[in-house]
Image 1 (cartoon, rainbow, N blue to C red):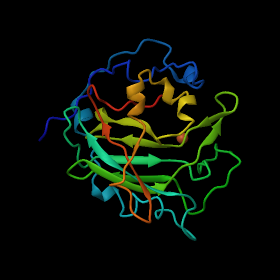
Image 2: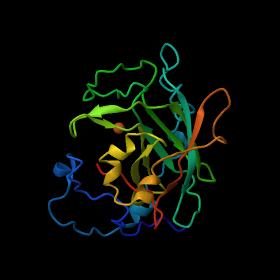
Image 3: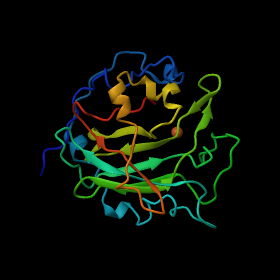
Image 4: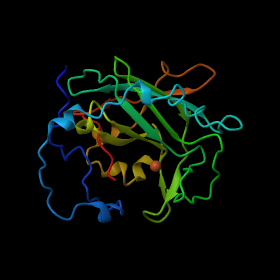
Length: 237
Ligand SMILES: [Fe+2]
């Protein structure tokens, strides 16, 4: 059995602080007291393990996995990449879950009251397992920007939420993927809570013609590193 991923202490020049004044909700969520170290036990490195039995054949394709009366509205996209450890080795058989707004910038959630239409053929949720080379691939609809109440006239850039379990709970990563060239990136308090510009850029996918399918969908590459000095920044929630 391969040595399990072990996450080294987080580099706070790369990851966002728990309290980031420009992102108002962190004032309620950030710990008010110093964190206590918690001993790691074997269970954090050995479980849970999600296998192919947990993922259906259409779970990776958000343009098909919630269809009720027709195809979802919007621009089709393909998001693909690799999941790696700090040495560049592929992390295989790893569960990736995503969730996102629809093309109009609306989530199916009772708390989302944005005045934009829901899409009856799009749930915004998907999941997939990485293959033996650490590769994954989603088909989806490009999400729309949406307003939020963080500050006056605040809009989130288009983004896709990612949750990765890696090999086990100890390598869990929750983050967001953004799209290149989005003018809202420079204005977003969540992305800009990451203190390092190069680290912020790790969350911006790259347009990739080798992933793009002719006549069907633009492709974006988003590689994810689960630990070490090149670790993909987590989101501040
Ligand atoms: Fe979101």
